[in-house]
Amino acid sequence: MEKGKDKVGTFHFVTESYLLDFRGRISIPVIGTYLLHAASIHAAERGFGFNDMNDRHTTWVLSRLAIEMDSYPGISEQITLYTWVEEVTRLFTHRCFALAGGDGKTFGYARSIWAAIDVETRRPAPLDIEGLSAYIADRPCPIEKPGKIAPVENRTAGEPYRVRYSDLDINGHLNSIKYMEHLLDLFDLELVRQKDIHRFEIAYLAEGRYGMPLTLHAEETSPGTYTMAICHEERAICRAAVTWR
Amino acid sequence: MEKGKDKVGTFHFVTESYLLDFRGRISIPVIGTYLLHAASIHAAERGFGFNDMNDRHTTWVLSRLAIEMDSYPGISEQITLYTWVEEVTRLFTHRCFALAGGDGKTFGYARSIWAAIDVETRRPAPLDIEGLSAYIADRPCPIEKPGKIAPVENRTAGEPYRVRYSDLDINGHLNSIKYMEHLLDLFDLELVRQKDIHRFEIAYLAEGRYGMPLTLHAEETSPGTYTMAICHEERAICRAAVTWR
Image 1 (cartoon, chains in turn purple, orange):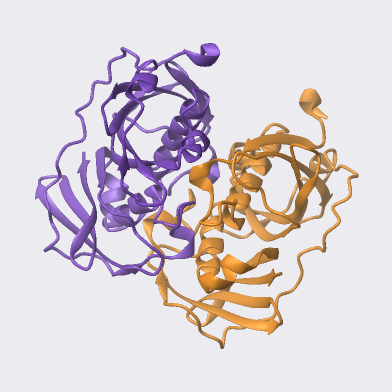
Image 2: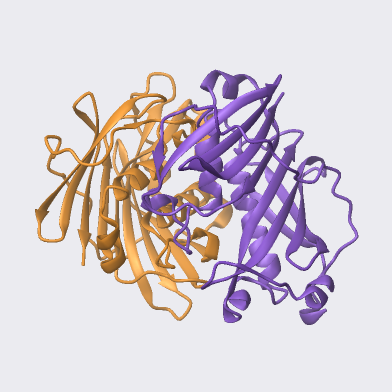
């Protein structure tokens, strides 16, 4: 391995008051930013970060993400986040995460699937399987892999939304974290107050662009589990599944 | 001083791709989160952080903020952020910031004014002037102080907005950073593409609550300078002034 880096990356965070939600805990979108932060630095330090990909006219896109939490960090809690590559295929890398507390307890785990795309054509680009595989770590991630999410495009909930400047990422598309925020905003605040998200899973299907009118959809498909979608012109640009308990 | 801490706090950031806007630079709201991060830790390390205030049944609220940028950090840039207390009065502390680059150049400065409020009554609480004054640093902050912003409530721009879950902070109110995002979303994307915000100033006047319907207002009051407001039932909950160049 280049640079003598460990396969598993370790990152430290302390939750801060201004990032907590109204229940005084970190939210799924904030956990998402922690995961992106760790993934981004872990990859860059091993020679396959955003800048390295850009040199090859490619960029990483997050394809699927599942976060499963047993408990949530509150205010001023120390979090140790571990991240590692579990598998590399021709078009996807599977990256795992574990979120631990200062006392060694585990808050939860996450799994993500990333693709490389050509920056011009926006088409999938084959990965350097051999190079990336040097970083595969044999560490368990005891949560279910992200899978297929049923369509719920026929159910409408929430007000339509139009993609704004603050939604845009460096590629000029709806930012991965903003999809999460818009989806979670569909839930009734009483539900958010009384229950916890045990599992949040999202599949990114197409890129949201500035000014694009979006519709937001949700259906309780089994008790406590909601299947969701964000659509543009009746086609899903993302699907999600959220289990509360 | 307790804990032998320097009066000026020094914080290091590296800009990351997933936090950049579509121009590949950090945005005013992201700079805002850096400032809140530094303010929060600087205060906590000196015994007047969120938790210390909470022990006294008070909390800090950001009253005014001005950010003035000469240039913006791009991707993978190192930022050193300095913060210090400039002045303490009976009801307000004035906190300053300087944002410097890895090579010592200055990106910009910021000034903030904070009040303490009682967590129950939401009324201003007097500050411990003597205790806080021990941390006053005599360091220049060469930008104009935040001042009075003219009302523009009669001008409407943008779609009305209703406060959502993702907008809420730990106090259950519209988060300071989200006000910025909603205001900047009013600007035409062409303006954002072609010009830079030289100065962004905001005055927080009242707390936005969940479900509250808001109207957003903007007027170009002199060439390149926009006076803005967010209102609830025709009363401004915040005013802002943005100068582009």
